[in-house]
Each structure stands twice: as structure tokens, then as C-alpha cells.
Length: 261
Image (cartoon, rainbow, N blue to C red; front, side, top):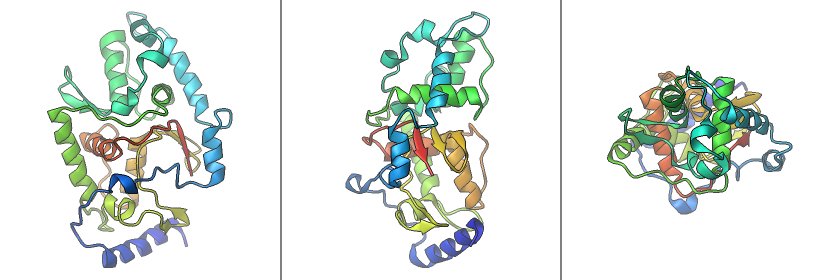
């Protein structure tokens, strides 16, 4: 059975078993990271930095951190110093509200804002090699730390919008994110185990992608599978959903950069 057929069969089973509008967040005691639900071989690959293919992007990101760029020929390190100290825990707090931009931004957008404001350089495109490398390097600095969303009224509104989107049935398959990741986690879809969808390891190296990708890329993949509207990279709708997912995973330990099937 191919992936599309599996999705259609699975969606049909959900429509019979899950009430429309069910909205109940997972209890903290129930939460499991995708790492915990992977096979031993994938966990071993992630645990060993010499075997984790995402670490190649981390090395590129470390070089970018020190590389002068833009009109002012400034590097990230010129402002922030040693990322192992200054960026410790930073990725665990994003998305966050940016006062100057007057909106909630994720880690990738935060990088682009810094490039424009401080370096006066051209921003990296979403999902480009350089963006993924620098975000992976920054995410590494939060490895082993708990996800800790900041407290801000604008961020709280973003979280609520993301929560509404998470529980909304949408697309031709009439599914919500919660139908899979809250109500049916640990079941199989197309031969793969359905995770709870906690964003502890992003950016991740996904074996299916044969490369590193962001959380927004994964969200767009899910929307495509649901045959729902797929928002563009950087869209407010995706940032809101990121904000909710990080809130949903609050207190869980960051394990970026992760390896996933």
C-alpha cells in the first residue's frame, strides 16, 4: 500500500473513532519525544555526534557564526561572542516576540532580522543551506535544556491561534493535527510510527529527506498529506503553529539537531 492510500485508509478510520472538535492537550505525564519513539538504530545515530549527519550542518553554522558579512563586515560573533555561552538556551525560547518588528518570530526569522539590522546583509532564504546550518548550530547550544517559552501577551495570542489551528479539521481528508499526534500516537501510518509531534530536535536530519530541514518544512509536509492549504515558508500561520507546539512541549528537553526516519 502506498503512502497516499495509507493516509486515505487511516483518515477513514479516524473519522469513525474521533469526535469532531475534540480538544484536549496531552497531559505532561503522557508526553514522549519523537526520540523516545524511534528505533535503536536511529537513536544511536543521533546520540553519536560523529555519526549524526546533521552535525555537518552544525560545523558549517559554526563557520558562518564567525564569518564577517554585509556592509559593516560584522560577524555574529562580533556582537554575541562565544555562542556556547551567549546562545545557551536561546533556541529553547523561540518563537518569541520581537519588539522592533512588532510580531512573533521564530528562530530563522530572528536570524534574518539580525542580518538586516546589524550586519546590513542580505537575509538567508528559508530552507537554504546557510539558514539551516546557522539555525542548527544555534539549536545545538540548547541541547539538554528544557523548552521554555517566554511570557508575553502577543506570544500568548500567537499560541492560541496555533492551538486553534492544531485542533481544526481541515483539507480533503478532514483531519486535524490532533487526530494523529494526540489521539493516535504510537499507531502505524504507512509502516511508520506516529509520534506525538513535539519539536524538540529541530532542525532535524530526516532520512526521508536525505538532509536537514526546519520545523516549518515538516509542518508543510503534514499539511500536504492532509490535502489542506499549505502556507508559504515564514507565514504567520506556521509561526503560530510553531509557537503552540513549543508551548505544548514546554519543559521537555531539547535534543537538537535530531535524526528522524
